[in-house]
Each structure stands twice: as structure tokens, then as C-alpha cells.
Length: 272
Image (cartoon, rainbow, N blue to C red; front, side, top):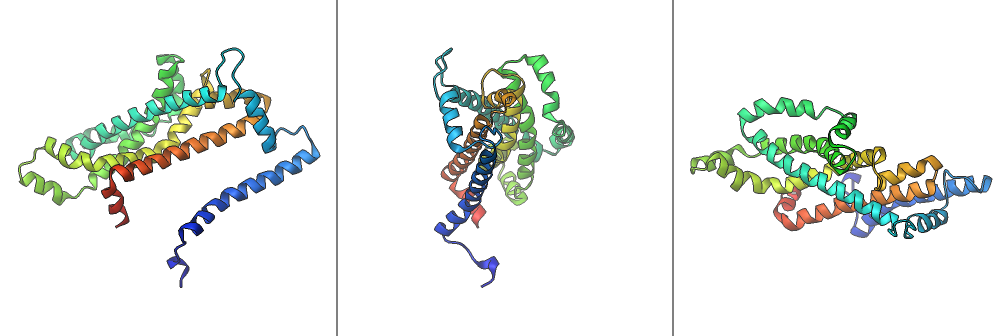
């Protein structure tokens, strides 16, 4: 049987999926042991036990000043900013993309502007956001919205343009207005595609979140990473990076399951 036709079983696929992660862990353990053997005070590749000890002392124990657990507080602060930014971006993306993809006059007027605006590096305008909105939460959320919304808009616009012309023509033949087309045909089919688009832009949203927290914040995962980097505290930076990766993976997984649960027809259509 040709290699292209061989499909792994569920258990085999699970093992194959875990192998890259295990290899990375083994490589890190080997490199860490080698460096620590030469220098017990090496900070570049701390051992896993040292990282656990540091996290317990510095991040998982209640702060003597505030009484809050730093790690939990950082996580909740970052997730709140990310959640607000992504939800606003998704709503704006859906509202803008449907008329862009459906109505030629709107597309002719706004599509060039959206394309040009999506090319502006959001990180470059972060100082402008801080000047306009101050150093608080609004600027951080605004950076996520400005960075993510154009990506969602352009993706969903193409999805709307891919709709079957025959379906739209039949609906108009039966007397459907433009508003009826949007509400009864376009919108129901765009919701699962919106969740797909959000999944694809989550990584970008995390980049903007960490960047804004690194520059101006007093709490958050990005703030903590850039705060301790001056001490070369890899024993705290690495666990935070791993935690951010796990949160991003979990969000992607939950969105995928939510899409399958809410829109089973969409999943079946893709498999067909």
C-alpha cells in the first residue's frame, strides 16, 4: 500500500502526535543537565525541579503586599484583555465583512481601505494608542482589536464571496430582500466560519496582548515575563511561556469543539 493511503489508528495517531513534544522535552533535559553539570548556577536552562520551586515561591504563593496569588492574577488579567479584544474584533469583523462580500457598492468603496489598513503594523501605532487612551486597559484592548479585526474582515469577506450565486438568485426570485438574504441565508452560514476565523487569529491576538503588557502594565502574563527578564529568570519565564501556549491551545480546542457542537452540519460539510 502506498504511504499516501495509509491512515493511522486513533492510538497510533495519538502516539505520533506526542512524539515531537517528548523529543523537545528530552532535548531540553539533556541540554539542561549538560549546562548545569558545568555550572550549577547556570540560569539559561534551569532544571524542571528548579522551575517548579521558583514558581511555588514567586508566583503560586500569596503576595505579602497584596495577598493575591501572582500567577492567577496575571492569568486572569491577560485572559480578560484577550477575551474582550477578541469578542469585539469578532463582532466588528462579522458586521463589516458581510456587506463587503455581499454588496458590490460597499465592496468598491471600503475594500481598498480595509486592505490598506490591514497592512499597518499595529505595534507601530501602540504609542499612539497610549497617547490617546492612556496607559490603562483601553489601549491594550484597542491594540488587539486594531490588529485582529482586519484579518477577520478579509477572511470572512472572501467566505461571503464564495457563497453559491444560485442560492442567492433563487432566494431573490422568491422575493427575498437584501436584508432577508443577510438574516436568513448569509448570517447562519457565517457564524461557524466566524469561529474558524477567530481560531486562526488567536495567535496574533496573543502577540498583541503580550506586546502591550510588556510596554505598559502592572499585571499580566506578558508584564511578568518582561519584568523578570532583567534578572535572567528563565526559571520563571519558561513556565509562563509554557502556560501561555497551553492557554492558547485550550482556547483553540474549545472553539473547535464549540463549533462542532453548535454547527454539526458545518463539520460534516467540510468532511464531505
